[in-house]
Image (cartoon, rainbow, N blue to C red; front, side):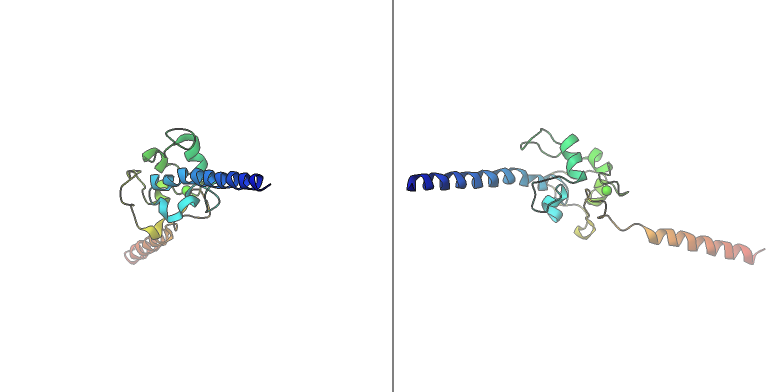
Length: 152
Ligand SMILES: [Ca+2]
């Protein structure tokens, strides 16, 4: 009986270690996208702890931007992936991750300001839209119109 219990514990320990090794194998992917450490696993997964279903960006990476399928695949970050808008929120993956041109390489210092980083796989998370410039353009148009009226 004791040996059966011991055997069960060994199997449980092996399963836990195996699961930890599995998630650890993917952990480095956080370092394969710019500013990946800001959101961590939530950059690609719906759950912030990693594993489980992928968000729109994670699905896009898995489908088209890994060097190989499975655990050994590395993210191919570059201009092509940066230019796409995985979550359809109107901001490219590169804009959301602070590398609009897709020039960052794994191992480089993170580009951009951390405060501006948003989730490329969550349409509800995006940079602030440039409302100020639209207001400025309208105001400038009104000023020009007023000056024109002065000389009529
Ligand atoms: Ca986006």
